[in-house]
Image (tube, rainbow, N blue to C red):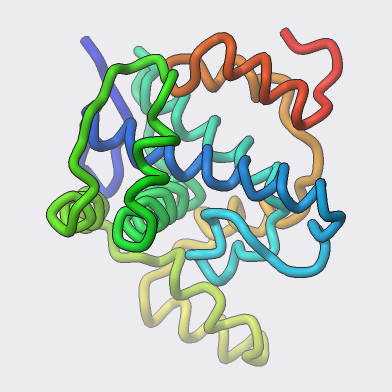
Length: 215
């Protein structure tokens, strides 16, 4: 039985649409990392798919890729996985980013899907963009990850009151704060990319991101 990842008691489907959202968000962010390195501008501004989540927009782009790979691995695992708030953020951001790319740069969709592990052909049109947004909207989560940034400038007592009012779980919020302190790739980064990237692409990622002794 395939368990997939569960968000708010809903199962994120193991579908071509989900593959497309994760892959294009990954490839577009990777492409921008490579470009930023070439012109030495990586530190000038935030970029990457996770900028769709205000609280996580400062997460380094290479860490964003690692986080996406972790969530993808949970999604394709044969073990049951309950989504963390970070996982929910990543699904939302990947779907939104890919929908924006479909709307603004349809040719990039075709380019990012080439040479992947799945042979997927899509028409990058408004209908596809709507399907991508529906993918996360249909999961039924309450978008708590989008609310956290509103509490950052509040006094602690007021922030705690508002969190309680909106039913935000501090234990779940903790994972969001943990992400902000990450800098290095996890040891499982490359292996987590299985079925999202081809073996050749994974080797290229290791080279482009200067990951030594890839496993």
